[in-house]
Image (cartoon, rainbow, N blue to C red):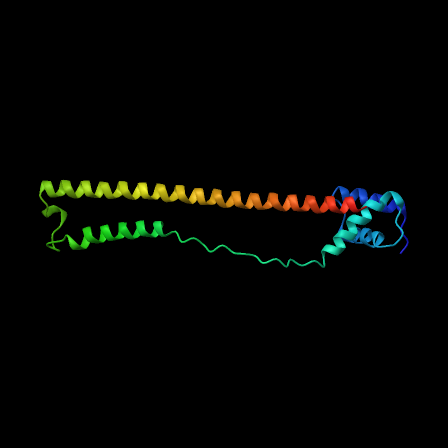
Length: 166
């Protein structure tokens, strides 16, 4: 396959602007795989040979996975609320046929205050859970960002090594 330097230079310009097709990139790979490359394009040869070499590399380090932390405090608070509601609903019924109309004013007042207290408790609990969820999401996003910065740094180190060897 005969390559014209002018065509290769045009393809490189398209490649640098991320406008090449896969077929054009394949042409560039074939050109830079040759022994003889135009002197002013030698730095591209190192880059394309690096891409070819990294295809065969495999990651061999052990990956230590962190076990998931059990959010027991969430479930403990849910269980406590269920236990309280169960005890109020089922255990405090002296007469199961009794309705709200049968309650005295004092009992009705206590009933309504208890109902309001549980409603307030439930809304505060939900606000706390939502805040914890938002915090967990933010923490997860921060961890992902830190990992990506580490990958960028690693890529920069590798690129510097390639260009220093030439």
